[in-house]
Image (cartoon, rainbow, N blue to C red):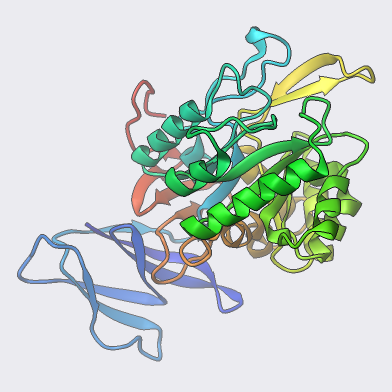
Length: 407
């Protein structure tokens, strides 16, 4: 079935313009001021689309579709943006730093689409003992089966990294869902790896990415340790490994080093935080100070956020929420005056390019994946499409999920 979103405001050519969008299968087939759709009289079952002539000077496009039915969605008074990409999600749950009772529950399948997230990268955290890369890959496959775009990272905080196949390179090359490796630095829960250790890990990830056509990233959890990003700078100084391999996150408390890293050409990732003003202000500042396109942010959803005292004793624990991605964007726009088209870049276009998905994700353009979020006049999530599949309508889940009730 073809779908046409009508009368919605999309950011095109430097302005928010009234727009019609045609979805064919899992792709955006056409974006124009107005689209006239004619169903092929033969009514053939096969999907496909032909454009009859070019778009006119008035922005009107005539389309002949072979789909038997065309569903229309009225977006009048609303804005449409690309689906969000969250590159740091504990899909299995995180935590356990305060014993078994503090393990955070797994991500529910319904949570991402309700939060406007259509692409996810799953990760492990401190716990690579009661949770495994095998579990992580299985959950990632479930998210894909549900209709989302989902990837994951091998490894966790530990070094040598826990893997599925026996080594990091083989995981990246042979497991479809695995696009890189995660490790922890400057954290009292890490393995305190050496410069040589990180060099070897980055070299393996880099070559595996080249062989498999994946990003091959080393995603670095950064804690509150004394050396901050020093080990990364040391590797970059001593080796020829490209800076693009290293993807440090949780950089909100290492702002100066983060900007230094970005000015060297690296991507920097900030983590959404319950203290919205502080986090959102940091992201807005980074968007102005870092080179264009290198700032991203993610949620750490379902990951534990332990509170430590000066003795590194846990005195409290919270958990990340995937909804904080959109909440941060709303705060940036409504409270800090950041234009919507600028606020969304760290979780759409920028992160799509960072993950080597920039040719199909992160933009509303013909030929791109139909990952779309429609926002009402108060910037609340109204409608979500993931790979052309209607997932959320009028703020409620539009698909059935095993073991979950419809919202």
